Image 1 (cartoon, rainbow, N blue to C red):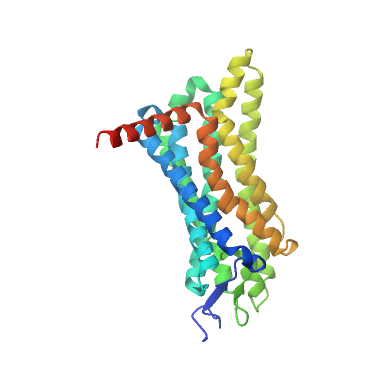
Image 2: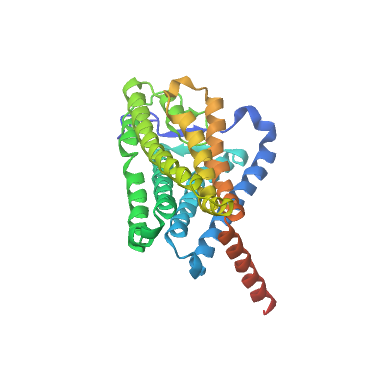
Length: 316
């Protein structure tokens, strides 16, 4: 190993994965392969359903399509490398690829925070200001919100990743994790990580807190408006339009808040791994299920899509 352009002796890292569960690797490989295929397939089905059904060509489902795209890329940045640790003899990842994985994962996570906030704003307008919804939430507005989510997400982690790249890695290169995340990398650095850790925690807290606060404020107004609806049927109908999004928000923010809004040194890697699995693997799998089962329009559209596909096969 020689000193590289990043002032580091380490030119590659070894992704250890789950060393304490080696006996379960064949089972874990099949389990996470199934979850990955299900996640990608489920989100693709939602994406195609929205694109091919003119009734779903509205801002709410347009933003949902972007969420599905994010989930596909989000899980694809992590899971394939994790699967390779279960079956491959070589678990090495170059320094450059490790930093790239860290950046992409962080960017897509930040983008999802922004997009969930945009989706909450859409539901706020639809329920709290229905008479002006069509004029305020136009196609142009939804395009702009989605663009801001993607661009803002990919700008947010530039500084944290740059700070990690500048750290000195001169000795151990085994990452006791299933992907290149900030906490396990900081533990391997030979230089002081106090400033880097503080900066990452502050930036992560600011991003998560601000997006979560805006989402919570939206739902305070939404719930307040729903409770003022006189009929039970009206309340149920209004709540059903945002129930799926609210469920996803609770699952997503619950895990990332526990993980990133406290100093990284406070957590053991085992706890961190469990939390990471929840929002990198489990949550992307749950999203298609949640939106398909809890949203009546989406459920009916997915059924129609499968019927068209089955009819197409029958005519061949």
